[in-house]
Length: 499
Image (cartoon, helix red, strand yellow):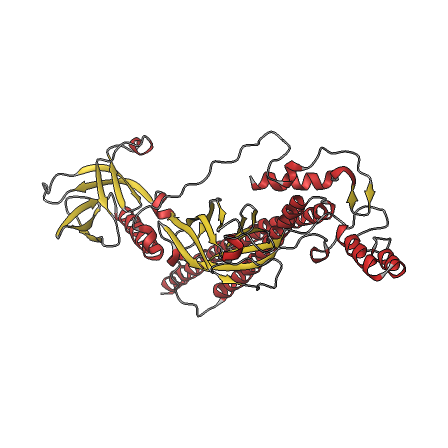
């Protein structure tokens, strides 16, 4: 009797120690998985921080460049770069804050003891492209047809933001000879979700003033000097000249890096904006409402109709990428119950493509069989086939009032589970992207820009700068249109990254 009790006690102790060891291993694995999950946001944080640092350097270079510009077109381009960099910095900081909040919420859910099972299914990403951007103008008939009144000319460009991605269009000079502001850029966002919000902002700046560095205070002083008299005007002119304590000079030393609002030169202002979402996506040219800011008293004002025309297209990854692939056996409707055809199947877009060989996929060979997979398709897993080791999957489609069913057979229940999960995810992606999954929308992207030989006019400020010469510094004024090596290096990096 004592021997039986001792045997049972040993068994219980053995079970407890083995169970404790297994539980310790589970705890260790969970901790390691948690550390891996925590490391992923940190890597993403580091990438965004690098982007912020890069844009800050670009903004500082644009500030120096704007202060050194002596020509109107150069100053407008530099101010555009400054506005773009500042907007990107704010967007990246918002994205970083959002990721921090998501990380905190993830940790809270992970530590919550009463958190129930959650559905982690997420829709696939997609590419969203906007092109053929047109903004109509509404000039007065006396200005446009009779060419009367003051010739009002503005420099305009658009900033487009989707999530953490921000792109800018080319700058366009607009006056009363134009009926539409046209941007020929095709801009694509590659990591959009179906709940995306694409913000389009139109910026404008009056281009009729002289934006040479330091010229504005001198011109204003000259006008006041002639109107106030020689004595008073001379004192005012001396007070407005850049000196040792002037914000546009640093006592003859290296150029002073000014805050963005204090940089002399042109300033762009937000003239109009709108936000586009999935409901605006159509495979055609459409009109969208604009929210207009400012009024006729503003120097940057342009007579907008209040609408914007563009083509907004989207390509979800489920329509362009292979979502699932593997070997299956197929039996067509009405065929011999014992006859199965082995195929290599690819789930993509609105079809299940069946090939005779796996190599045919890369060789772009026509599939031997195509089974429709769309929002109306019905799919179910049947009971285990007694004549096969796997399980059947039935796919039913209706064509012209007649239902056609294809039966698929897998090698194992695990394969059946993987295929069914792929089908459910595919249906979920289609339900989220809606009209974008009816047909594949066409997106034509321009070919990558090739470096062109430097000529007198290249359309960008960097290419228009004169070859570097020995600069003689007068405050922030540079002689012979020469720019310091630091500014040229920053600007070169900016354009290389943009291309």
